[in-house]
Amino acid sequence: MKVGVTLFAQNYVDWERFEAVEADPAMEGLPQLVPDGQIYREQFHLGGLVEPLGFDSLWTVEHHFTPYTMITSPTQFLAYFAGQTKRIGMGTMIVVLPWHDPVQVAEGYIALDYMLDGRELKVGFGRGLGLREYTGMRIPMDESRERFKESLDIVRDAFTKEWFSYEGKHYQVPRTSMRPTPRPGNKLADNIYIAWGSPQSMPVAAHENIKPLFIPQRSWEDHRGELVEYNSIRGGHGWAPERPSVVCWVYCAETDAEGEEGARQYMAQYADSAARHYQFMGEHLQGLKGYEYYAQMAKMAAALPPEVKTADLYFQNHVWGSPATCIEKLRRINDLMGADEFIAVFSYGAMPIEKAEASMRLFAREVLPAVQGFAPAAVPMPVE
Picture 1: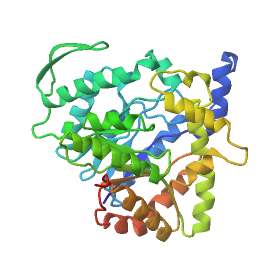
Picture 2: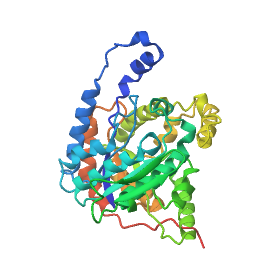
Picture 3: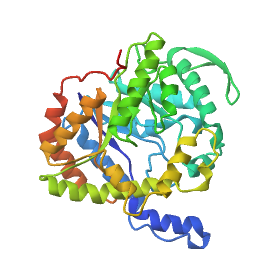
Picture 4: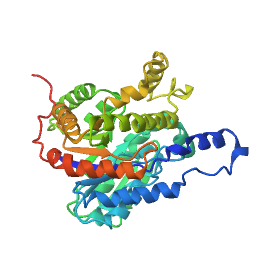
């Protein structure tokens, strides 16, 4: 199995200052405790380790306007590393299609594909869930599904044709030529993935012939069930089953106790950051078209007893502990999901870069060879 690394550029310690300034313009000018520039320099350092340590790919994700993650243009960010590396593939997890002109999205991938010169490029797309981001991008959030579908059609044409046009409700593209034209022999259209947070997105991926990218929000058993249904729908179209790529937060340490301590601290911070960024408890999700699942989850979370913490539920899905324990957790995930690639998040929350690098190096030395040697597990399929 291939193993990649993803970078987020998260400035967790800035949340209190950010929320104070967001609520009261008179607070503008408060200094950042950790400057965003420092976060970027640290991410560039970790990214520079990915190829030398033996990983197979480098990924990133798109977000805007908060300290949650600060990669605003994944193809631009990855272009930097394309020029710094020679072997690894790359991927996006994800670019949010409804926020952008789809023609410009396609241009970014086509250019990056040339920079990689035949190295694998996985094209991960999604709909987005952040109200602040939709507001800042001046896009109505209840149009996300329609815009996603139209954008996907346009991007596919742009990846596969020199000339194309499109007439939709939200996007109209006159007869247009992509320059540079898509790289001869490129596989961009064959390597489109969708991250589905809600089960409602699964049929979209299946019917649109898009590959699955799992960033776990439920148990791996639940995700396996979704994958079975996904491949069942694909079979109805006469398409072969697909393996997913899966993402996990990782804290690899010398002992299980040390791994648990670090994971509970920094994964809890990540969970807190996600809750703040997405404003899960906000009223905006209630009645919002296309986000019914998240509205239901918000109600359920609000009803949880105080002793049940969202961070604990999150903590159970990811990979932490000694190298031997990390290997066994990844083996279980692979057996359940039949993954083609595992993507590790090593830097998150307020984790110091020294700890992120130590975890990454230990994983590379003692876990990576074993996981890369995993035999392909069976693809989850419906029972006949």
